View 1: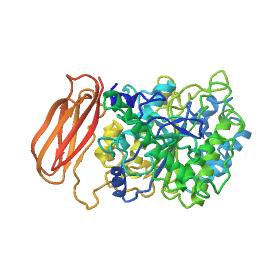
View 2: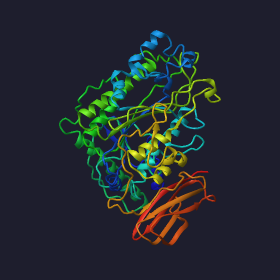
View 3: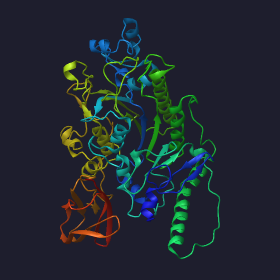
View 4: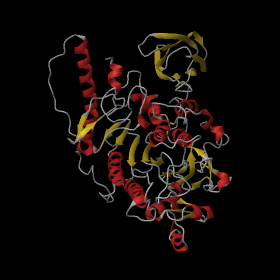
Length: 556
């Protein structure tokens, strides 16, 4: 087996770059590294400490009973048994009104609602995508991969972003940073972190209970093919253990697992966010965290209004966990560079079903929270009239979910326009001009009005080299994955001879795209792979003694 294949066939069913290691003696996890290249990028972006917390609501959260359009008569007609229908029930919504015709579901809690009043919670309405898929598995993959509904992509949007910042031989060379690129508080990592070569995250249930691997002194492997592969496996184990030892060292310090609030142990999301707070407080350089809350597939007995069961209980968990986490990191004085985002694979049908529940639907609201979030309602109310629904009687999206991702990549992580487009596989939804003029940036309509506003309060400037000059860079091809033809763009700090080549997965040269002089600035070429089989290819550029390589995925 080739090493590349070995990496992609390691445990937990996803491509990996590390041998399993023990966390608290309970299960196997995977650790992946971060290289100095990412640190250089982040340090050049004006704010090198920004953290994103992804909260996945698994099962398809019912958006109409999360952010409730309770003044719409169509809501009353369609939600007689699962909604807030009677006048006495509607009176319960008054303390949670976002504006006159919208309210948060009360089980989300007063503290969560107060985050909105304090300008720390944004409600983005009607988020979805064209030709929505109502399968849990496929819809989840679409959101995690940032793909069109008809295109299957095997990498995640965050994985693609992180992968563009690491060296060619990652993850064999994990660099000098002691911390992972991303951490999932889970038994395994999500597709959202999958790169073309490896997963770009560590999966741990409790980083404070890591048991470092015992030191071992094995015989030197023989100088054979099998011995070389054994040495390779040992090297990966040693690298993965580097992050485990980091956890061990960090959480051995006094007070490392102390919080300023009490997270209820009966709230599964709160337990996860408590550990994220530990990591942030400890000063880990990890920039992305992933947590999840399941159970939102409420076909039967949805119990929206009951904070002790059904969707009501899940909303209790959600509001309680987020508000406690926000209060905790603020008390720890680490909240200035932390934002969070919720997402679910789809919303639910407008009309209730015959089992006091709701079935798979389409668009739904997203929450973004943090001190650097412009807390507001963005977008118009869900349009519930039959004439405004799709052919299946479901909601029509106002915003493509990749617009939200684009705002985060641009305004929170500061990546440039070209890289953002290549990561999100949807150029027409990721250009500044698709929102407003370039001077306005990525803005969304406030309260369904014509007033436009950034969701990020203080956007990070787009990345530039530290001395302000144009940097040598091979951008990710666009689109990627590509069906046959793709554009490869590169930037040169000065004019000179350039060698640009494409190799297949075996390392064989497929085509030389450039072998000659190119001028300073941005250059681009077209790569035609129509005659090639589907698979992973590698584009390599050599210029002025420097090289860079990017992987490309050909999908037919």
